[in-house]
Length: 234
Image (cartoon, rainbow, N blue to C red; front, side, top):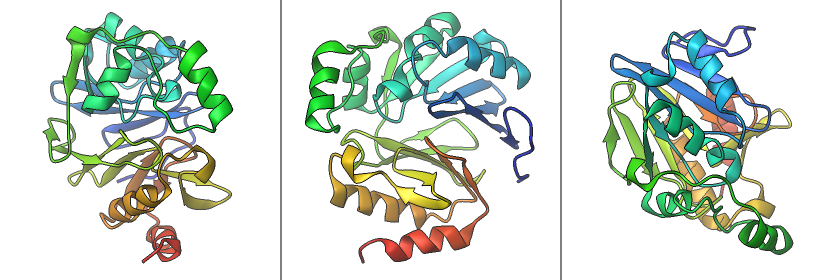
């Protein structure tokens, strides 16, 4: 699998990394069209469709949108992307319920959470477009994309792993910052023990690429994976 180039949107085979400014999203290319992993902040649909065009697709070629968790920075443009493409939106049951109301999950410090609960919404996703996914499912993406429950950062988060491509879409379960692979920051984590368990479980897959929500994706770096595993509780 090639390492990222210096292009605006580096790719690894049939996976394209899109840095939207505040969060990463990813396009996957398959024979039947394209799949988007997460949907960024509100107002990012045009950027994502522009990157899709660079990757060889048109809006109608976007067949699936998979949301790892319902935070605004991961779901904010989902409704706009879905409306323009007609894509099916896959999410865990609890995530889907939040998407249908344009609400964020509870995991932030109390003052911030109060504002999110009472004053901040993103555009709700059409309920008819939502399809449930859960632990153990395999989606028809990248040779079979395994759905993995990944609670911790939020309780309803899911990660996705393609054994064929060696790519782990970690959502906010893992990130890169300060030159290291890290778990979700404690101050924005719903359940710290669950987050550590999730991180260990995902790292034990030994992915070639960790396509995280924040920070540059980690590519072919088993030493950094081993370093984080050693720092997690046994």
